[in-house]
Length: 142
Image (tube, rainbow, N blue to C red; front, side, top):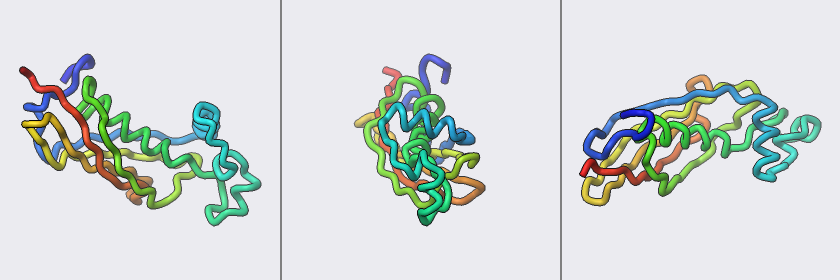
């Protein structure tokens, strides 16, 4: 793999894994709200969030999902792959100053179709906060 092109389909094996981690700040959450228009007060209003079951502001779930995209697009399978599908369940909240570790693991490779299925998970301190699967289109060498 190089920075211009990730793994080719023939270079991948079931069980390969990669991770990326980021600590979310209030500024990250506010920027995401501005970019997407998702201004749900549970994300941006501390007083409102205090009245919810979470008791504090939480990050948008799609911020964690974005870290999965980072792993897929930059590491495994890496640059040049195409994100086709994502199924995800958000299992627990992510708070400001939480460090999220996004991990992907190859579960299946379809050589004929040029498709790779991966388990996608996000953790905060070993606690599963997001769980799902992704499907990627990956180039063949020939």
